[in-house]
Amino acid sequence: MRPFIFLSLSMILLTAFFGCGKPPPTKAVRAPEPPPKPISLDTSMKSGAELYALHCQSCHGDKGQGVTQIFPPLMGSPRLGSGEYFVHGLIHGFPPPSDPNGSPWMGEMPKFTSLSNEDLAKLTNYARQQWGGGGKDVVTAEIVAEQRAEP
Image (cartoon, rainbow, N blue to C red; front, top):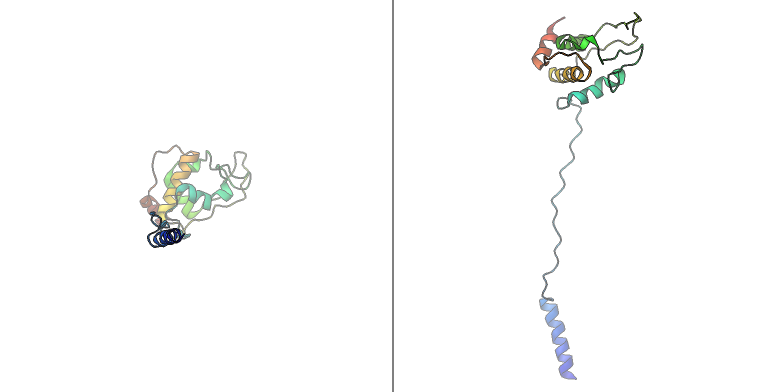
């Protein structure tokens, strides 16, 4: 019986000392998560669609349809025909338009002097591509700067 106890005890000690032949399990090391991107109030990286949603959609609607007798539609508006004219109006404001029946609109177009030249160019090009104007001219930041200098 002693050899059996000795052999059993030897096996237990050897197993404890050398293990069971398998390497000890290792935990996978994960790379740390990158920090979240900060929320920026800077609009310079926004697209024309994002700028429209932020500055124009509340009055002119998500499809440029406007609000009857309050805010005119952009869809099919002759104001979109000329990029220079449209961006000039964004900077200096538009007088209230009339509908085809001669009734004035209630809302007045604000002046977007706080937007950068690049953002105004993106916004103008987006509106003209979405809702008409038919012009093939692309408004650039340089054109916006020229219109900003005009009275």
